[in-house]
Length: 317
Ligand SMILES: [Zn+2]
Image (cartoon, rainbow, N blue to C red):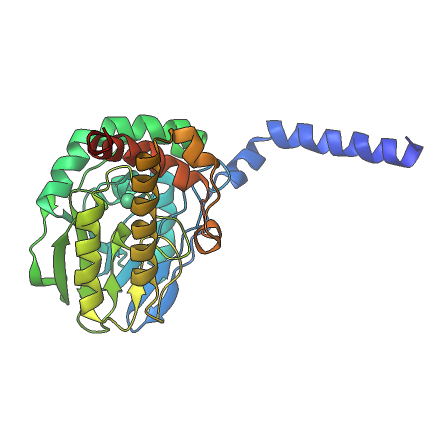
């Protein structure tokens, strides 16, 4: 090693050492950079990374929608941790000094509601079954999120939604919405149509360029929900994960992926493959290029395959 390279190596080692021990660095590394982007009149979004939870992204993988209400902002989904909620709160006060007036949670997955803690003094609305599921599963979700995200989760305590939202045409803080009670991604998924702009906010019923997650999925019911959402013919669709869709592709893409996933697993069960053999098979290009692949495909095999095998195998015997 030349003297210069040795010196650079030492320097790099020194920087790494400082970086690992400096509280300032730790603070900087564990702060979220959340920027509300205006997308329509009186509507903003926070766009999450199209990745799985990691200690690099701190769980900032979810989309949040923000609607201008009469007495403040209506926040739809609140992110993955207390710290995320705090960053969101600060960012949103720059849009409206009064801050958030109301929170709505689309479903009970933790990346969509663990920021609620910061808005606990506001009405937090969701479907009744979502409220019940969040209450039942909060401890398990919390353990898992601490395991996945470590220090990003410090001080986070799940605050389930507490106010049952009406369905059909409703008014929330002066803003007219249509609330569609659906399911399939989980047992209870809420989609919202903003009357003023036509924006369809889907929660995790729709993903774009990011593989759908399936830990609580009922694929048949999910496809029915996608048929309902396609019939809305919204001019813009905000998926739960992935970019805003103004081209009408997100619902079709999600449906095509779920169809392929189901067919792939049914065929594998017919051939008597085990989970490892399915994981080793390549993904079609159109699905391999999605965010969080192949990890999400592998997780879906473990979520869905035992049940599909159980249904298929008796027929094979
Ligand atoms: Zn979800």
